[in-house]
Length: 241
Image 1: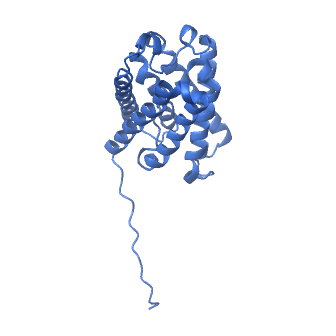
Image 2: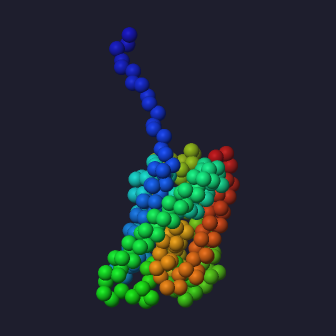
Image 3: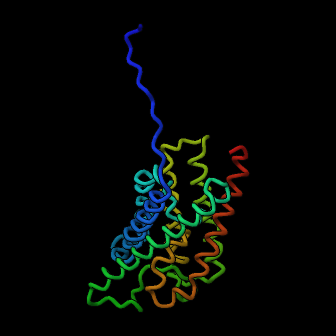
């Protein structure tokens, strides 16, 4: 006998789909409430840089908090990418998206409740951080500009998510580049359309801002197209993954 004690290794318990869906709902709630809340309540104080950092740093935190449970997608475009790569079944992907939308909508209701506590708040004038183009764009950019930034920047985000978590990368540090990519994306596109790159984020507040529902289709369709493009770029550069 060597005198050493052998420790029996036990496999980590399987995580149920219910836990994964719950994590996605909670994570999307946090992302919308904290990051969109920064834009709504503190935007005039922190500026575009502060808003961008709110989105990026919140995603970094979520990557480490719920990443081990669900992967911290908190974004239907990311979930679509995992579905395309067959890392989720269609049923699981549907559960993720439903959870993300529900979590986001609850956050939207909470944001409206907080905003309504300010006597001078006017939903028609002040809005609730919804995305938009044309007259609803922060700087007056049209639909064509919104289409380009949503496809290109969502593709970038999805590519970074997939590349950072690839077996060739360092998955333990993946939350950092993913979060900072989201921050940079916001710096680029907040003036264009308020930055979506996430249909759940857009759906979360569109029902509570005048005119936003009429344009919501663009912030569902084009981020999803961008997500698929991001998968294509990932497959091109990581062909064996």
